Image 1 (cartoon, chains in turn brown, cyan):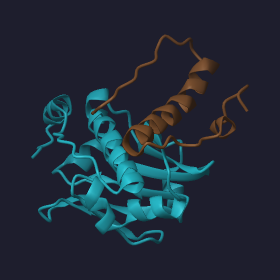
Image 2 (cartoon, chains in turn yellow, green):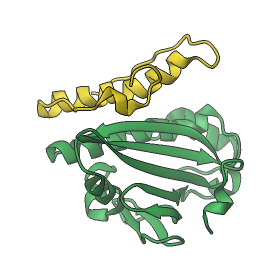
Image 3 (cartoon, rainbow over the protein chains, first blue to last red):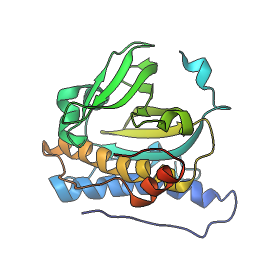
Length: 54
Length: 175
């Protein structure tokens, strides 16, 4: 199964874009693990380096 | 050849893909750099790499044909590997220039973050870049499946038509 996620409509230099660019790969990777192995990934939000989320 | 020839001002990242894997940096490194492992997740292709600066980086197709050739630019096991990654199609490198691929491997919690960056030394259109943008997610998703479950993904994939058309328009012969 191929899942494609598109998240658009950001302003130039958007900090939200920086944040979601770090967040989505972690979320979708964990979703894949959960579906295939039954175990989600334990990724600390602080490890994503997103401003205001650490 | 060394990393000084590949400074950011000449090579620019044009495609990046990040995936998190329940594994260790050492296992991800092994998966990326050994033929036996790569055959499972890389469409049957064998990755052979001489892990030292200037060492050969070669990928053979399942039929034994030379698919990718390059050399090691940065090698810091198990964290960072940069190689030239040149598709062996006639005139491709002459017209598109060299391709640089960097793998970064970082421990994150109980998982590993693997980031692949594909860089080029000249502007390339989205049509040309579509090959990597379709291929890398499939390859690295399957790598993740192999490491986490032992079972690769079975993905049927052809080179994107828009990429083949763009290459043909540039006078690059494609298989």
